[in-house]
Every structure is written in structure tokens, then in C-alpha cells.
Image (tube, rainbow, N blue to C red; front, top):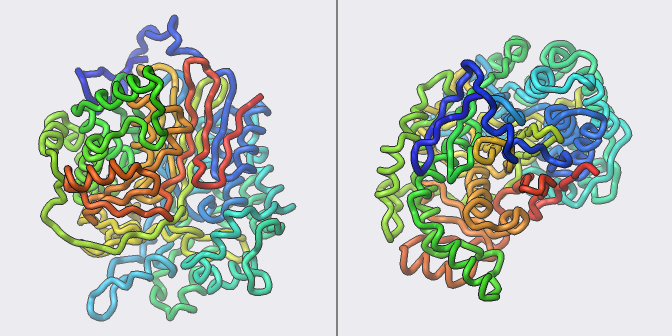
Length: 601
Ligand code: GLY
């Protein structure tokens, strides 16, 4: 296998060679060592446990990821799904990484005109809580494809579906997170206005409470058909018919905006996942593998790391080392990041999100200049434009700060052979559109809100976009999902990571990677540390609670940063596995949410 060349300091876009195979350069080194155990981390303890059970049965990382994702579709309806989409990254212990795009597509009858009122203004809620938000789901085909291409084949597809079917048929105990999310607006109102969702989640009119048992017989039947027939049993036949009928009825209830342009059986039958070339770059001797367009996550991650690589982050790291050597306690929340580094980080994020808004979209429809955006000259240009003061740019558009939500979910898996899966999947906002396919028991996404419906008009996350991300039939909306795997020196997998959180996915993943790779924090400390978020528009930077007051003051006074501290908000929910030199995986589910890490005995 040939590895991408590393050109000097910094980060380069690399091309993976598929030509003749050279001798394995790592054969004799610990860069080829396998982990001592497999591990799974996901946003629900039952789902993580399902993944480890599959590993214990002899399944590999792909098998475990599929079973975990299906379990999430049952026990984590806020984001786990059959009716949504996502991205999966498969990074084998040896060989080329592979990425799968199972993002939703726009139904063939939809056009931006459907989202506008008589005056040509975007009617915001149409892309969020009506059938106009619902893209053709990709998850059922995506999970089946991952199993088919990379599953161990020691287990049948039906056996990967079996735990999810049992959880849906026999029920599971509602946890505090689901109970809370069902009570929260605007998801509650959305779900209450859908007859099937109301019946399932609000029996008698009240939200299910923590400790109650949620049984989902319709979903169990859908999963049974899927287990028997694979992806075809979702995109054709009773499940597909129920989905189309549900959207027709929802449109009629909401005034018949879509009319006869609704999602059709043909839209479902013609849905296809796409195998995409992963984005690969380097940062300080670590090979970073992440998702390319139509996700913006990998590109923004690589850009930010490359820009930052030119700044003396090591000064901060060395200060921490010195303090530790002198026995001075260094608070975990501060660890490594001085106000100056935080300022550089904000400015690097600002620049990456500006490129995102202008240039990124579905590569099947627009040319995304990935190489140019990662070119050393462009990165250098971006880097030298960062000075001592904040640089919010000239377009002073402002939106209300987007509300925090956990709409998306991430799972990370490593198996004992050293293969990794990093998968992020979503319904978009929490519980998606709130529209439930009653006869089939699953919720539908509102992913089409990720398009830029009109130039400069922000979506639900306050993100603006341009022509590159304009809605067109068959097109996939731009995403922020950032499933990522890091290989130490290009050899063994050393970190599997990802997060939910809309655009905060990108910035959460960046900050944890920096804290682990540069600031030498443990994975647990790196994930627990407070986060910041900058996305170009709006120009201010959002700060979680917990940052030292002195850092905030210096960022504001010395670097001119406009900061908004949001003590009640949490950014992202990182699910990551670190494989250190001991080869015993350290799996951490973000304490911001109720997920769980499960490691094989
Ligand atoms: N729907 C959130 C994302 O794809 O970024």
C-alpha cells in the first residue's frame, strides 16, 4: 500500500494510490499494532451495548456500526433514524479508507418556488416542519451498503437487525434525555401536530416520562421487512407506499402547498447512495481522514488545522508542561489554550466557514474547488491575514443565535483487527420534521432546510449559503457532519471521532482533536473542556460556560473578539475512541449527553 506523501510542515490534500502495492512500511513497527479490544461509543447506552454484542459475536466494525445505528433508530428517535441520512467512513487497519454518502436527496418535483410566499419571501417553517423539508431518506440504503461492502459476512444482515427489532417489539425504558426532548419546544409542537407521532410519544396527551416503556410495533414490522429484504424492502413495497401516503396526508393537512409535486414512489425507487473519495490530509505526523462534499465537515476541519499549524501553539503546550513539572495545577477547562490561541482558533474557523458558505455544495451538481481551498498557497494566504485583532469581515448580516439542538447523532467503532467506522447520521432538527410514517413507525427528516433557499437567508442554524448550495431536484443539501478517523503516521488507527450539533459538529471535532494532538490532554478532559463556536455569519463567537474569565477578557479586550457566553447551552456531543500505545482503547461519550462507551472484555 502506498501512503500519501507528506510535504513539509502542514497539511496537504493527498491522493490515495490504488496502483501496485509496495511492501508494508509499518510491518515491523507499532504503527501496525492492533487494539487489544474492540469498542463502540454512541449516544444511547443500549445502542453502544448492541454494538459490542455484535463485536463479541465475531462481527467487525462495519457490522457493529450497522447494528448500533439501527438500535439508535429505535431507542434514540431524536436523531437515530430510518427516515434520515448521513455519512460513514470505513478505515481498515490496512488499506485505503472508503467513505459513503447516504445523504437525503431532493424529490424530483421540488423547486425553490415552493418555499416562497406571494412576495417571493422564504416561508421559514416550510423547510422545517412540512413535507417540503423532507428529503428522500438515505439511511436504509446506506446501512445496507456498509454491511454489503465491508461487513465481515460472518453474520447475516438479519442478525444485525435483530437487536433493533427486539428493542422496538418488546420496548425499552424511556431515559431522561428522551423524556426531556419530548417536552421541549419546538419539537413537542411539531410531534403533537402529527397524528402518529402524537399517539406514540404522547399517549393520552402527555409526553412519555422517564421510566415508562416505549413499545414500537409498527417500527418492529418495518425492521423485520428490512431484515428480510435488505434496502429494497424500504424503497419499494409497503414501507415506501406508507411513506408516500403519509407525506400526501401531511401536505393536505397543511394546506396542500406541495400538491401533486410530492415525493413519489419513483423518487424512492431511484435513490442511490454514493461512494465518495474521503478527504485525507496531515497534521503534525497524523493522517487525518474525513468526509468530503456534500459534507463541509472534512474540508473545514483540514483547513482549520492547516491554518493553525503555522501558529506557535506549542508555546502554550510547553507552558502547560512546565507548570505540570513545577507541580502547578492546570485546570482542565483551560489546559493549553491561551486567549491568544483561542483567538487564532476563532479566526481560522471564521475563514473556513466563509469558504463553506460561498463554495460548498453537492459535488454532483457544482464544482467544489476542494484542491484550491486546501492548496498551501490559499492556506498561507488565510494564515497571514490573521492578526492580533478579530476580523469579522465586511458583510455585517446578523441572525438570532441559533437554538441549541442535538438533531444529529454520531457513533464510533473500532474492532480488534484495527478497523474503524466513524458514522454520523441525522434527521436534521431534533425528531426531524416531526412527521411520522404511521404505518411504518418512523420519523422523517427535514434535511432540505440545509439548502440555501435564497441567498443570504439563514437556515435553522443561522448558516447562509450561495448558489453552490441552492436546492435542485435530486441534489443533496450541504452538511456539517464530520465523521473522522486519524491514523498515527499513516499507520494504525489512533482516533475515531465525530459529533452531532449542526455547524458545531465541525468546531467540536476540531477542538477535541487539537486538545488531544497538540495540548496532550486525555480524551476525557479534551471532550469535557468547554467549547467555542465561530461560523463566519453571525460574526460573534459563541462560548460555552466554563471558560476562565481571564481568557474571555483577553480575547475581548486585546483581540477585539465579540463573544457571547451561553452558560445554559452545550455545543456538540463528541463520541470518540482513542487507541493509545497501550492498544487498550479509551472510548468516551461526551458528558454533555446521555451516551455510553462500551468496550469488549
Ligand atoms: N443536518 C445537519 C447537517 O447535516 O449538518
